[in-house]
Image 1 (cartoon, rainbow, N blue to C red):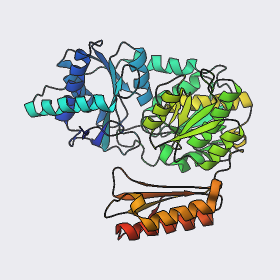
Image 2: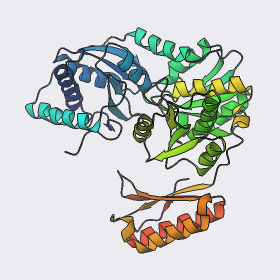
Image 3: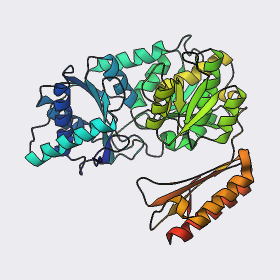
Image 4: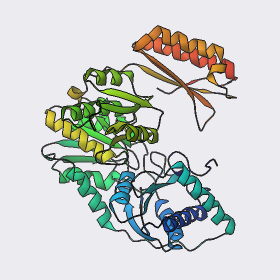
Length: 458
């Protein structure tokens, strides 16, 4: 049975509208509560949220559904998605619920379900929950929303865990932190200052509607300007629920997830911490990671494994291979020694640790990465066919691959949510990259009947 409510990262929609209306949110809690009881797990669930104005009422509805099965709720209030994952695993909880739409604007929200092991629920578990959710809605079961009181001790234990992962502290380091008016707004400055850093915080004043608004990891130009003004050692930008982080070096250079994988991967290998059970050192990335990262890691004796786009696929491959480090270009990095999910604040601590140990900044630590020009083009299409059934497109792809050889890459895929074909071309020369990206996009437009111009994304 195909899932219709749950996507790759929980349920996400405009808050107040199906499937994020009050009745459906409460039905999610009811279905989760029934699952907890039937699984004979400890009847207690932790709920957290980001800073959207819709968060409190959504949390109250989910809690009301849980209460119908006598499942107790502990409410963390505003916290991060990885914070809920940590609490679900290390606390007396059968599951965790995070109310967040990550990097989306404030009008959206979402419900993410996390199991006791700290991982998102499997597709099969979500399918079973969906059936029960629809059953509850059909029966018209609804109760008054629960009254929730924040347990501040939950965040304290999570921050203590993060602080304990860093030895030596951050004394003398100056950090600019762009918290996107989201989950990290109070937590990140407190954590970094506790460890001895001087923190200049921007976009740390959430009002329910300004989360991700022209700030955070999607708008690094704001952090770049603040870095140059403050003359800080490093800048870090989070997204709305702080499960990812991107950085800005002292010079203003942007340090993306690829660069973070290189810097931390090399350091972990030097410390003898990149291998498990005698396996060769490896890092798990996605098909979108730059070829420059793969070559830079290879020069360090580190293999790079690629997965489809999505932290879910990265984590699956990490678990399959016993890898300790993996992530995405977008800044979603998983340090499996410390966490079961990508964690922006944990990633920041790992990057700061490398800087302190090396005695240099991110400009110097990333100079060995040659970033290849990469062009992403979206082509709106009227119909969808298998790529192998599009001869002119196949011919253009092969021409590009023959031209680049081992020094370039071509990736063409269809969007799972929009009528788009996505074209990615990467190579050593921008002119050739642009030329092949445009030729492939033109062939797709011709074959699939698009009447819209291609959109260059990056």
